[in-house]
Length: 157
Image (cartoon, rainbow, N blue to C red; front, side, top):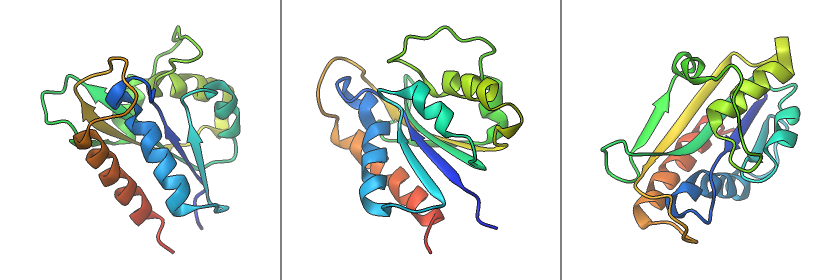
């Protein structure tokens, strides 16, 4: 049985490399196209509406930037669901336009109840800056492209 997968990209494209998660989502939308078994969501602007759309999905893939890792910009981290669960906040306080992946999972868990998927993966892409700047570094873009290829390879027909 094919799992229905929701792919969520986080970030702010006017905050330099922080927009890499949204870049990955844009690339996946254009390269994968419409499929019944995959939903691709930009979590940058309408995060709470998207969380309600997770109902009926068996799997979640999250993509976001991570700063201050000590690694080169563009380094990829793939975290298993067990580590994701450790990061989920019980009652996060958020601003509507700055929801991060661990906060999104907290709300999704409460909103979906027993329909909350057990299969969760997180891809984090190392960055150095979230200063106001439209566009990202070539290193962050290359890291984003690596994640695009990793995710696309999972869904080859």
